[in-house]
Image 1 (cartoon, rainbow, N blue to C red):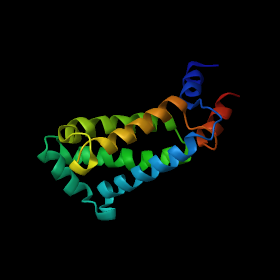
Image 2: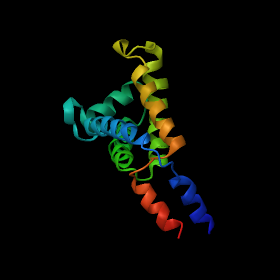
Image 3: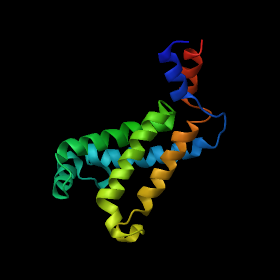
Image 4: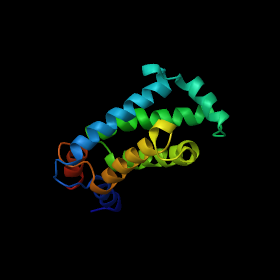
Length: 151
């Protein structure tokens, strides 16, 4: 097995459990919706211009670029997580995004979501860390790719 195949095998490895599936579906759906808010202004979101302006206003610059990156991670990462495609890299990107959200926006407001605290972001972070550890479980595209890589 080549080094590339070994690395891919590690990234794609997973349990055969069904437990990650509901987690993937829920986290993916939440992230797709939030990404659509940032990228397209869907679901009452502000789109790239509005989100980018807000990010600039809190010191995350360049706001437009960071809004684009966050929106892409959320939207396409959410899709990837749902179908179980490169689940670990998608979960790592999403977890990193949640750490940024917690430390730059929510931490100063305390724990509870009712005060714009970090409760919800921490919950998402925990779910993505769980997927990072377990992999996608059963019924994931990663398993199909892993089977081909292992040949």
